[in-house]
Length: 154
Image 1 (cartoon, one colour):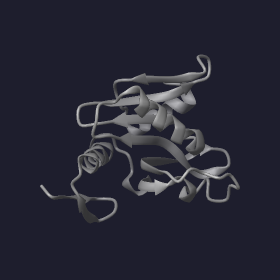
Image 2 (image 1 turned 60 degrees about the vertical axis):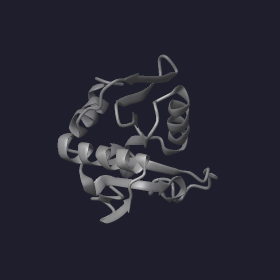
Image 3 (image 1 turned 135 degrees about the vertical axis):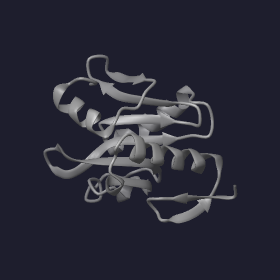
Image 4 (image 1 turned 45 degrees about the vertical axis):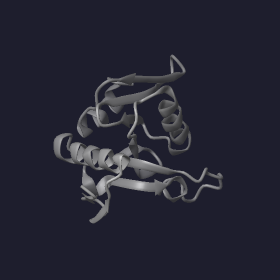
């Protein structure tokens, strides 16, 4: 397989190991976990994120693999990042967590997920512990939305 089709970008892309993971996760998010395709961006620069575009902050020149937005989860923005997904072709080592949470320092997504071919881990910032907590699972879109208001996960 030399290329993979991206539902979101509506085109064929070189089937690098990381791109294959990205496309598999995108399909999983939209087809199994009911994330709306219209509220997902792929490979978008931090400075181009809608809620950050007017900020005077200097952002690192980095791209987020997948960002899933949700409506009405932030008082100032109609759409706000619900989930940041970092896709890797390698084992999910501690430096992958540091990379994803570093991106999220700027992005401010409510949840962070780490994914490779074998596993998916979901994390959120625990203000009591003052660090991220991760579980070996990824929940459906509406479960994550409901967890925000009911404080189930975070």
